[in-house]
Amino acid sequence: MVIPHSSSHPRAVRDLLKPTLPVSLRTCWINGSYVSEADAHVSIFDRSVLFGDGVYEVAAVFNGRLLDADRHLVRLERSMREIALPAPASSAELEAVMQELATRNGITEGLVYLQVTRGAAERDFAFPDHVQPTVFAFARPKKLSDDPNQHGIRVHVVPDIRWQRCDIKSTAMLAQVLAKQAARQAGAFEAMMHEDGLVTEGGSSNLWIVRDGIAYTRPLSRDILAGITRHVCLDVADEAQVSVVQRAFTVEQAINADECFITSATSFVLPVTRIDEHVVGNGAPGPVTLRMRDAYLARAHRLTT
Ligand code: PDD
Image 1 (tube, rainbow, N blue to C red):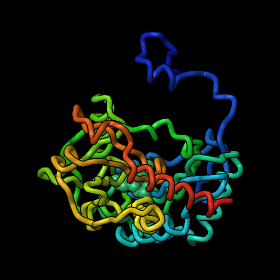
Image 2 (image 1 turned 180 degrees about the vertical axis):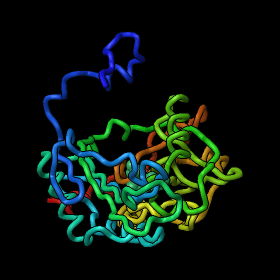
Image 3 (image 1 turned 30 degrees about the vertical axis):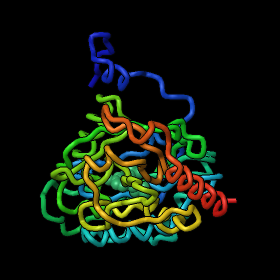
């Protein structure tokens, strides 16, 4: 089929129709092979395409090395177990692939994304009898140590409309897509999701507040993802001289907090200085947040150099 390359197409469609490929293509990995991103394809019958039937991980690359890959792969194993998806390879093999992608693509700071899906089969909601999981991974650079957002971000409050197993790192993320798009349209970097006023988490991060020198973060449950960065922050809290209480907080308490911050593998620790039109504290990154970010970065350097 020949699709006319006409200027009457909307811009996104015109971009898809561009005749030339970008000069530099990444090396990706799919079902056991390293391939150019131009050759990394999944079937239209893949269950992650049809149903979001898959799970994933995102790990940071720092100083050219994967950060906390072991913890990410333990979480991936758990996500696969929870949706009865057979592991396509051992954690050690997947970790080696993730590191190799960072190396082959010359990434010193960035991230590696890995997805496992139930595979391609005739469309049927229940699991197909004979199906091979699809597994793929790619890497991309991103500034982590010198993130321009380290000076403070705005979050936008939205209701959490997700399902009841937010502890599974599922690729079915339409609710987060809508939350983060609403945030972007509101001029915010991240969404602050809540259920009846009680903060659950960010669109793709965990949320924290600080009141009278104590940092609060929601305890783990099926309502939030067990963030690896959140866990590492609990581990380095002593070094950062931060007392932490795992307790849920409301949007109102976040607005009136002394400090607020988010944590994720791709942002580490970032200060939240605005919640919609409200200024948090004095509008500058607070001391507890900065100590936590510094301790996180110091540990990341120790582990990767
Ligand atoms: N997201 N909560 C949600 C809903 C997330 O999607 C993420 C991470 C986190 C933080 O988890 P961690 O510290 O392990 O990155 C919390 C990744 C970064 C993503 O989807 O891109």
